Structures are given as structure tokens and as C-alpha cells.
Length: 371
Ligand SMILES: NC(=O)c1ccc[n+]([C@@H]2O[C@H](COP(=O)([O-])OP(=O)(O)OC[C@H]3O[C@@H](n4cnc5c(N)ncnc54)[C@H](O)[C@@H]3O)[C@@H](O)[C@H]2O)c1
Image (cartoon, rainbow, N blue to C red; front, top):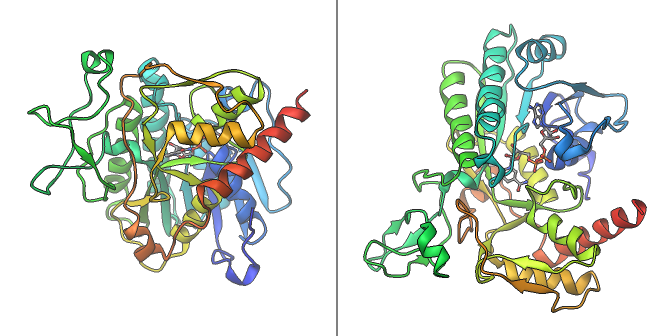
């Protein structure tokens, strides 16, 4: 990871609360903050699904304080805020599995929606609220995302129906049955979440917008595309398709490629996301409307899986295009990242090739150290 030189680091005077700060993105963010911020407070329950049973915080150094606490615990949030008076809050703690969200609806709502409500209440009760809150929202709020109709207008297709998918027809279609052409999704597209997880992420945005209104605390909403890279849980079967692929390849398993392999994602490298978070904390006028954070580049699941097989030294044909599908999965996801460039002066630095090589190196090391 490229640590920003001290003179480039913009948050030196801040006391920073990071909910979910032990997670994949949060821990990379904390690594960046710990050297330069005045104080960083990690607030995380160390969810066993992500960290394993009995996990503890790594030693982050003198100016990082770790609190093992649940985001649904209003008293713990109030203590974190009154004891450390953060000037900046990154809210990342969440349940994150799209597929799992259908099986654990109340848990996803309690943690993502209820937890955000508790956080807002604690902030509103604070005598010295932070200058800014940055939310890690998701592209899941767009559902199927932007497609273009014949007349050039942007439309959001309805979620693909089970009968259509069962028949092996995976392409989003308009009401007349015509295949639609995907285009990068701009933030101006109205939200249309296609999963319980997506709905909870949209609700986080709405609650923060409404709950912080009238306060001096600014809000920055970042909508991440598929974040990948070293540190993503290799044990959590519900998130991170590329980590899951790495684990399966290193275990000698055949990759199950869903649908026809032509699902498209916008994979954005974790260090690019961390840089966007830092800039979102520091930017002079980021605005309160959402900002997409992605690579802006489409990548098919099949092509990406084949590249991982190759760089991990596995037989390149060790995959099966199964036609399996999951209700709520979307077909095509690529962000229009113009707003992030303009408002945050941010753009991704990692190509997919470079990022996948870093992921593969890390996954290989993890696999050999756990043997
Ligand atoms: N990784 C992605 O591709 C991606 C994409 C879009 C949005 N996001 C968002 O970014 C944020 C971070 O995601 P991540 O990939 O680092 O996930 P992660 O699962 O690695 O990290 C989430 C962290 O939150 C903690 N947590 C979970 N439930 C908690 C609770 N009840 N109380 C306190 N802490 C709790 C977990 O222990 C974990 O450390 C999430 O809000 C997620 O919705 C991630």
C-alpha cells in the first residue's frame, strides 16, 4: 500500500472515529490515518463471520484506540463520542452480503439501519459534534443501474425475473422485450435497490441526510462499487467475489461462474477507495449529494476469474459456466466517476491487472501461513 507522505496527508489535526474500522476497507483506512491523524478510534464488534471466533484487534500503535462494541449499542456510541470528541466520523460498520441479506432481513435492518439511527442519535446528543460524517454507501442503491433506451434516454430496467433467469436469458430487457444497452451509472440515476442489502444502504443515506440536517456536521455520501484487494476476508462466504475466487483456486477447486460468465462489475482497488475516503474527509466542498467511487472500467466475471486462475498458477480451464443465478444479483455495474474526479480531485490509480496481482500475492501468503 502506498502511504501518503506526511506533507500530503490532509487530516493531521483531526480526531477520527471509524465504525467498522477493523474490516477490510476500515483497517486499510486506519493504517493510513494512524501515522498522521491526532487520534483514531476504531469502533467495531469484530463480527465472527468476518474475523473468525475470538478475534482481537491488531496492535495499531499509540494513537489508535480500539473499542470492541456493537453499532446497535447507543451507550457505547455515546461514550466513544463523548470520550474522544471526534471531528470526523467514517461510518463503515455494516452487514455486507447481498445474498445473505434475504435470509437475515431483520439482522441487516437492525445493524445497517438501526445502527445508523443510533449513531445519528449519539451525534445529535453530543456537545461537540464532528465537522463531517462520511458514509460508505454502495452501488447497490442503484439496483440494475443505468441502461440506454433506443431514444438515448437513461432507464433502469426492472429486476430480472426468476422465470427469465431459469430460461438462461440473463440480459435486462425493456417492457417490449428488447435487450437494453448498459452504460456507466451516474449519481443522478434515481435509486432503485434490488436487494435487502441495497435497501438498507439507501436507508443509511436517507437517515443521515435527514438526521444531520440543521447541524453543523457536513455529510459526504460515497457509493462504492465492488472493492477488492489484500485484506478482504477469505473466510466470509457472503462477500467479495474475487477473494472467494482466490480461496477456491488456492484450495484446488473449480470456479463456479454464474449465469453465462458475462456479468459485469466495476472492481475498484481498496487503496484507491482509501484515498477517496481520505479526500472525502478533507475536501473543501464535497457537496452532500452522493459520489460514485469505482474504477469506471467494466470487467466481466469470467475474464477476471480466468486472469486470477492464470496468475495463481492454476489450470486456466478450472472453471464451470454453470448458468446458476441469484435473485437480486444485478447484471451490469459500472460507475460514472466524473463527479468524484471533480469534487474530490480523485481518480483511481490501480489498473485491474495491478490490483489483481496484489490480491493474488496476498492470498497466496495467507494460504501458506494458515497451513
Ligand atoms: N467491499 C465492498 O465491495 C463494498 C462495496 C460497497 C459498499 N461497501 C461498504 O463499505 C463498508 C465496509 O465494507 P467492508 O468490505 O470493509 O466490509 P467488512 O465486513 O470487511 O467490514 C465491516 C466491519 O464492520 C464490522 N461490523 C459488522 N457488524 C457490526 C456491528 N453490528 N457493530 C459494529 N461493527 C460491526 C465488522 O466486524 C467489520 O470489521 C460497509 O458499510 C459496506 O456496506 C463495501
